[in-house]
Length: 266
Image 1 (spheres, rainbow, N blue to C red):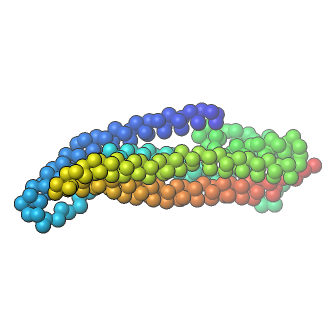
Image 2 (image 1 turned 180 degrees about the vertical axis):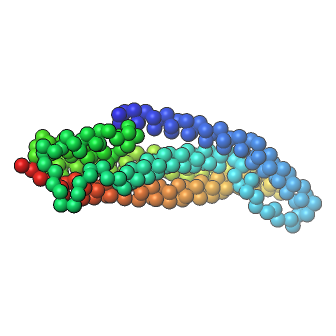
Image 3 (image 1 turned 90 degrees about the vertical axis):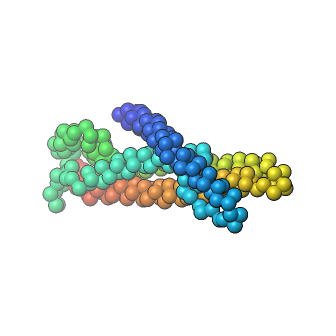
């Protein structure tokens, strides 16, 4: 079942990347680059008429280059991945509100009563049964039926919770890689812009600095946009990690209060 979930998540991430590329590129081709070209032409005309004219910074001009487009594609991709993981954690936490092991206050669960509770868990819909909490409860009940040892159930439960925490942490590595890659792309734009500006240095000596300033704009704008996007993504990653950590903590607490404290060996 875990293999199927991984396969579905891989397909989702691939589809999300393709959709992000299409949406962002379509926006750039239809709106951003035409608007940026028009604004630059207007500003150049105003400069020719008035040498003291100071062009205003435009959003379309700032984000028009390929590096910024790549950053926005990766941003949307990261948002899609984080949305999927946040929805999964929210579904897990909603299940904590349900009474999956219906035991009255002070009631004990003995090894010969395990099958009744297992049957209730196994009758859950597949969408719920595959979640972490039912899996831990079923594993704990089966372990208790076999060993009749409460401490063994507690250790098994803790091990499964820790394993899930490690899995969630490792799955955030892709988002962290994206958050690292975005500033790197911005620095590539910086190097490209500075290199292009230096190649036009001879024109600046002759008094034409328009090409140099335009390429320096590419250099600084790409890093500026990349760093802003990276800050936003890292903030959202932090919030997602907090959500997942609360889910893990509350799941273990649920198992302690609703299962382990009621177990009583022979």
